[in-house]
Image (cartoon, rainbow, N blue to C red):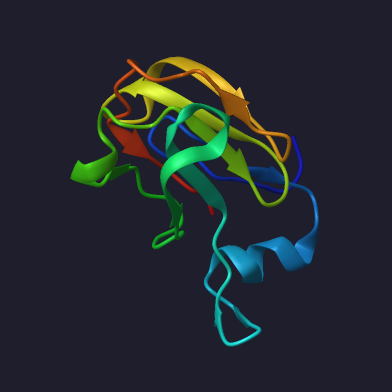
Length: 116
């Protein structure tokens, strides 16, 4: 598979564009960092919503505490992501893309990763 993959709380983002790597590293665009994952606590992208920034490539990171059991909907800005149920970016997962996925509440997301 070409490109890079973003794994967030059970999430990986895949892109085959060279410029995407710069974006994943936090390249600034329109005055702020370019974030890759959008999550909400309610179905259909309602409730409390938050962008999850990519902080470190190649290292599986723990999911922020406030999102451990509260994600009901998620989508990427570009490419794909895989949300995993276990720590260490392992176990069962759900694929997320720019169209998003809703109705995933009740699944605990424990870790995320963006491969180099």
